Length: 220
Ligand code: C5P
Image 1 (cartoon, helix red, strand yellow):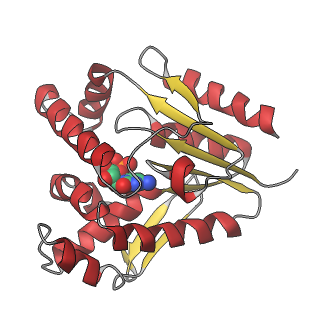
Image 2: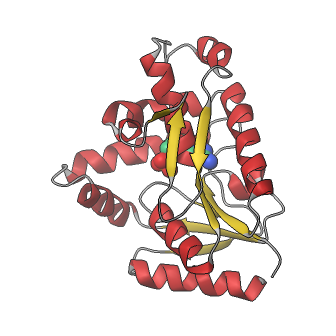
């Protein structure tokens, strides 16, 4: 069986991560969470006192941290200069700053290079999830999926994950981040012309997983 490359894009709260991990595990593929990479570089910027409001300062520092992603879907890992940052990259502080950092072209160039080299070295194939995978990072992917969901469904899922978080506040933060990600100049969040769009609003997670698995199997 030749290596298959699957790109899964979409806004926050559409079930991208849960779906991508499960599809990779089920099909024996590697898995890459590109949002975790942008969160990791943001975590490093915050920890090193880089002014998030200063794109030139972010651009200057973009090459400094060493970001390493483990691509086993059963236990994905992310380290910065050897430190496990899986927990710290999920804080509200990092979440609120990641869109500003990921909009800087030098950051995107750096992270895109890491992503392409991981995809090229994944022997059996890989599921890569993000915002610009089908459009920019891996335009020749064998399958491109664009996951969507209503703002209500996305906010409800995200507040469920954050246990007890206020649904209204979560909804606003999420829409603000998606608006920033969709409107940036360099590789914005967008559906590739040849991506299959799946609206997950009224689907359960197992249904979304089964849908993507069958799309991959059609391509193999
Ligand atoms: O997927 P997740 O919500 O963890 O992504 C965090 C942020 O990383 C996004 O809001 C976006 O700013 C950035 N991102 C990106 N391109 C990707 C993946 C994530 O700009 N391919």
